[in-house]
Image 1 (cartoon, rainbow, N blue to C red):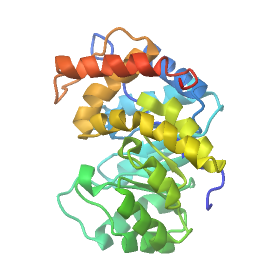
Image 2 (image 1 turned 135 degrees about the vertical axis):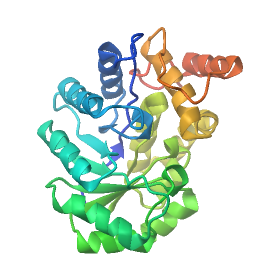
Image 3 (image 1 turned 180 degrees about the horizontal axis):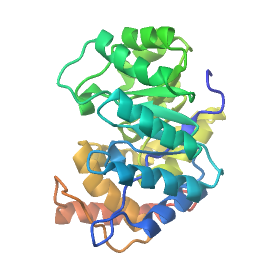
Image 4 (image 1 turned 45 degrees about the vertical axis):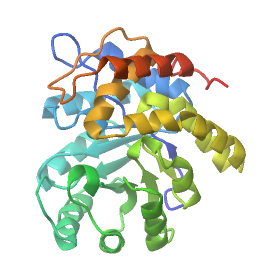
Amino acid sequence: MVNATIHGIYPMLYSFYAADGGLDRGAHRAQTEACIAAGVHGLATGGLASDCRRLTVAEKHQTVAWLAEDCAGRLPISVTLSEPTAAAQIAMAEVAAAHGAEWLVLQPPPVKAASDDDLIAFFGTVADAVSLPVGIQNAPEYIGIGLSDEGLVELHRRHPNVTLVKAEGDAIACGRLARATDGAMTLFNGRNGIELIDSLAAGFDGLIPRPDAANVQARIYDHFRAGEREAAMAMFKDILPLLSFLMISVDHLLCYGKRLTARRLGLDTVHGRSDVITPDAFGLEVMARWSSKLGPLGAAPRA
């Protein structure tokens, strides 16, 4: 493992809003505390599930500061940088480093098309300006552009502190990426964990899901790493219908996953911010059923 301390389940925290539209301090604190109690291995913020497309720069700084304050060094923190220019990502990286982030994840610039050379130049500019380990969110299905496996290997060759990948791929894609990088990079998958078992079997080091079922996913990872694969698979099968329901799209996940997490945190109301999807009555019924089955987020998984 390239980054020996960077592995496991790192839930990407949601951005919760108050009735006035601002960030909800209490909900953010409750989410962090519950995830820590759930046994996760690290915490992440700044990504698509954190509503990075709808947060102001000041709000992004605030979520990082709150996470660092609430975590208080108990777990490592990863911060995703979604700013549209290399200069803006470098500035955000400095904020993350000042608050004790252990590693960064870079999103590509918001352009309609980019070659491997274009993206290597963009990511390399940011990587050369920061001292923390750097990961790349390679999610063409959700972001629109991304590097080839060969491009990721070349980026690492040219910029050795780019040592991590946050992929968003199916099981076959995970296997290809693991073979292409051949142990040179730490690999995390996303997609809310619907390929968790297969990605770990392919050689991945962890997962960046949402908090929705993080306590169960942390236990699955621990079982798998301990060689207890039957126990890991049994727990995975139990939550796979939920993961499949949630991972229809990022907007679907933000609508229903956030409401499931809120229920598991004991929060009464979820306030949206320009939500693309309005929750459906049946969808809310499904989330209520899963909340009852799973119980509080910070508790041990139910049998």
